[in-house]
Image: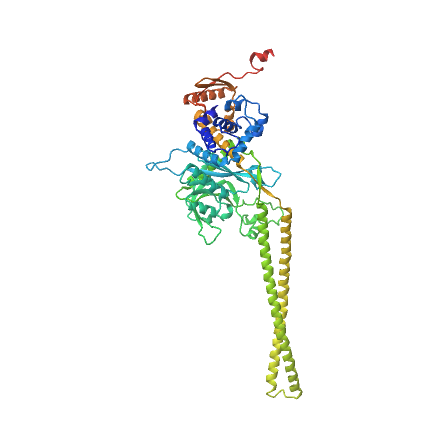
Length: 634
């Protein structure tokens, strides 16, 4: 009843019903004409399934409780068949897009305060965006991704992009295929929320290291956004990679008052994939974590081996002597682990920047764990699918085609070089043959002159010089031919290797074609509708916690509040009021908390969707046969 009254007071139910009623006939077939009361009851059934302990509409087949019947004002809860048909009709009518806008506007009006005026400017609001993947076990191939909850396994899954505010309230969630990366989902989420809420710009966005891409940060910076994220270890070398490093300030202490984390400001130029584009200038919060010490690798390992006795006294260095005792080696040099938080904006102090990012665990990771996951966020709804291009096969084929083109280009280049060498060898052989003929003629002339004893004549020396020059030319052509033969053998071996690898690549391509599986993309309409309802229920739980529960419950999650929501009792209705007498707990502290909740509800004047006032009181606790005197007489 508390959640039902909260849905009425915050306007969630009325907004959802109004949005669905605007989808005129025949958009939602089967509702002829659409009855607002029936639509509201069915929405309440889908909305409060987790409160009744049901994970999906299929669980309504064996549901025998009365909670959903009381909430919807019926004698019995809706059947699984009727509820599933209503959900299918909403998905077929493309109600997911409409409900996404409605949920975005409702969460913004619920949690975001009034916009600051010019006289009272404020700092930009901080929003946290993260991805969450839930596995889809299907007999067909669906887009896959790493599911972190299962140890990073690569499985068929759905990708959820979740948006939170700085207080940890889930504002919106969108559903995508499993290989949808966060760098694509984050801009879509921001634009979707801004259009739905008519906001100018969500400036300060905190994202995990999955969004650490230079081009991605550059595009968001051009839009005027300030992105806060972590720098990956492969994007810098050491502390010397940063510029304008400021003084180190203590940031965190342990229980003994010792500094465990230090922080300092710095600047860094993040290189982009295209070297022609200027790098992205970011501000950095350098964090030294003294709890985690990393061993410094020595540049010259051979010197370290040779100087293994450098710290020993001369009398302890004589290891060859009898009675020498070994002493412990000196500790290896260590350095504290470096954590780098960066932002594309300007003007944030290092402590503020580090605090803004590490609040992501409380504002988003813990909120998903404590609120959305207990509401069965990982449950899939709807397995309708259609054939799509096998993205995994396309990636492998593109790699293989690129390798094929590269090998064909290299093989053709070496064939051209081989043909060029063959042509050069042919020319050298022709030249060598001509020089040989000329040499033979000159040899005959020289022999004739020597036989006639005319070696001292002036005619002999020119002939002999031409003979020696011709002989040298013949040897030069022969040496070039031998050198070209060695080069031709090397080029031939290279060409053979490329052609052999080309055949293997072609074989791999044919194997990919033979082993290819048809990929199917799931229809996310049903799942998106149920995800939005779970986001709405989580916000209702947070709103009820903040409005009606005491200070001890202000940081609790869904599981701690669920016993209060599932309490049984007696309902008495009048024309103006609905009196609910809930059963008391068996724990006195919980009874005191329950009485405080009842006082707060009665003081606030909570109303139900039919306009009647809700009055809550605490009755007696339910007794069983083991309680009181019955236990003695039994």
